[in-house]
Amino acid sequence: MPKDIGSEMQIKEQEEKQKKYKEYSDYFDVRYEKLTESQEKIVEICDSMKDLLLYKNQKYGDSALNPNNIFYKGDSTNSIKIRLDDKIGRIKNCEETRVNDVSDLIGYSVLLLASMNVTKDDIAKFKD
Image 1 (cartoon, rainbow, N blue to C red):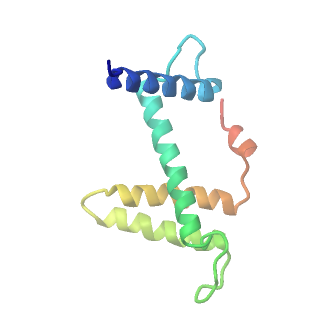
Image 2: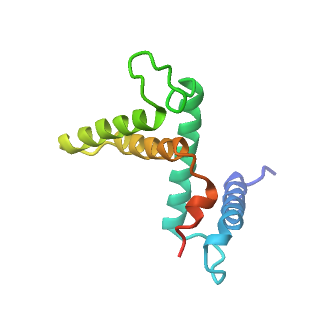
């Protein structure tokens, strides 16, 4: 008799959720045994942004943090600020907010933090 593939998928999904809960359990009230829907969405988006940034970093040769300085001779921090200004201007002047523009803002913000040599501990200080 064939295995119930649907049941296997549900079990695998539940195992993944439990794994994510354990991974992020330091952030949540111990009374809860699973992430809320909003928390799952935060994890999903942040994980996807990390994947996108690593992909683009490899594809474009780390150009944001180590620019070629062919035309612009400034440092990476100022270069990223210019890109952020351009992206904010695009969002401001468009009638519709595009996912690509928002994800670029997030990405450039992460790169700006990296160019400023911000560490995990620096960010952890913002937890109340």
